[in-house]
Image (cartoon, rainbow, N blue to C red; front, side, top):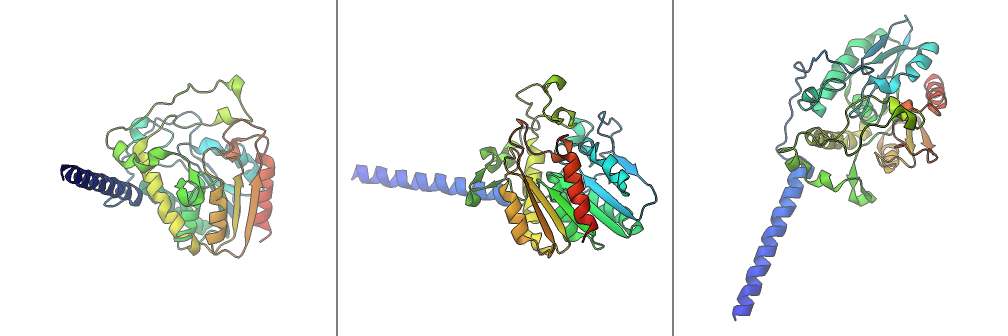
Length: 311
């Protein structure tokens, strides 16, 4: 009798623990009761990292391109391709998203809603001055490119989304980049910053230009969670995209799963889609920050430019 009572109590305890765990997981993954401020006005630090400065080129052209950097990078991503775009007759805009490329104290006050709010305001301020307007983004910049195409009233002519995430983990698709993502909402309440495990690479260790990247190193749990939740709306609204799309990803991307590419391709409503799959496995870098790699930037830009000009 006592044994049965003990077993019954154990089952109840296990049930309670599992229920709490499932609710905690749901609370984290769905962003229940999670709210963000869109006000980025306080993130105006003048302490910009060397190389992270925003860039604009106004050459009186009738077409323009907006390049959007990723997380936690900076406009430095596009230091090579901007010259190619200028050469090919584009006005060029490369904004620095609020909180990026300055100080950690700025960044930990920022969130996905602020980044997008700033970007949409920036886009709306320049879009009307051009007959043809294009957007290209790498990594989170690619996701923000998709979000702009989903939501702005005056659409871009076409977009290029490079190595863009619309999910980070997906058990359904066999992708588990980080188990930490399943409890990062709770971690972010106590930990603002996790230092990197390794020191920065020496320039002598450069792999195809990867040491020229400028941004924050280490991990920022609160901002990672904000991105994690922000990508859910991008994924949900992919069907709203009807403009031409250039979609590119490297097979062996170590940062964002290559499986994002097919999901984006399958869900956008665009009638004109060009898919490019790159194999950069000969390099030991992340295979992710495409526009920083010297070996491919010329061909990648030529391919994007050709797509834009032959719609």
